Image 1: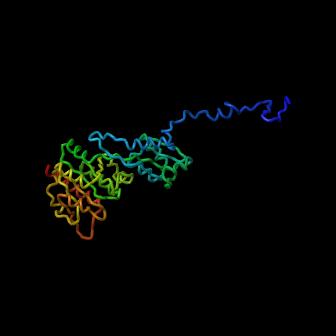
Image 2: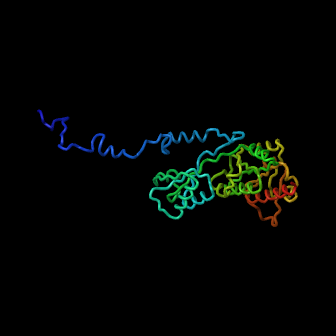
Image 3: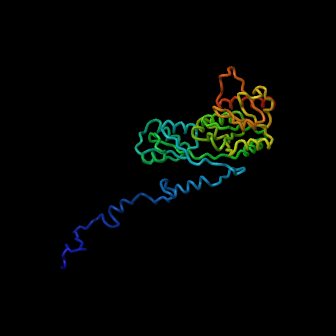
Length: 321
């Protein structure tokens, strides 16, 4: 029957209509001011973004010399207000700082804002849930910083640096040193006493994490750290290149003050905190040096032992030069 609005498919018309229906009204207003939608590879939560990140991590990088650098497998997060402030003060290579929505603005957060503005670091505001996800559930206090993967040089590049400087190579190699703070301390000493770089093994050893960067007090930005797939093989390669390889050992054959070959091409190998040099590395060394101690019960950790040795070598080189 004509005009029967109760039949199936009929639409009842109101006098004023619905101003929020269709493409106008509420729908149009909801789209205003949002700008263009970012590309999929630019949105952190998208699969395309993760694919691009993996491709960039795995792509070969040009070191400016031999082009055989290695990169750590992933970025690292520094979580917590004090930790982020300390990381920025130590000039870690922070790529971005993330603040949770509604985070309380205290003195530490205001200092972070000032530091990132001074250094041109990106500052992004995210939800607390997103910050929880990115930091793996760490106690972030509404603040976290992202440190990119470290680009390791090839060990042979350290020889090139010495040759370019017109100096006999001085390289520090670490054998199974697992504490990143010890690695950072060695890097700092290497910078202070003129070493041309530090070599770390690829496996069972500390890498250039945020903790190592912080302990180096900024020296990691000036000293090249290289990664060796096999430390023993790399030490033999250094020997073939004309370097003398000496290892630090409590029962070394030569006392450090009696060492007379410090002015030549030299590689100093420092062992792990508890076990010292591994057997193969010790057998590969041309000579084992000991640091004289007042008490036989005392020992030095890897960072301090490297610092003492590099100081003695620097003094010997200065007097002979």
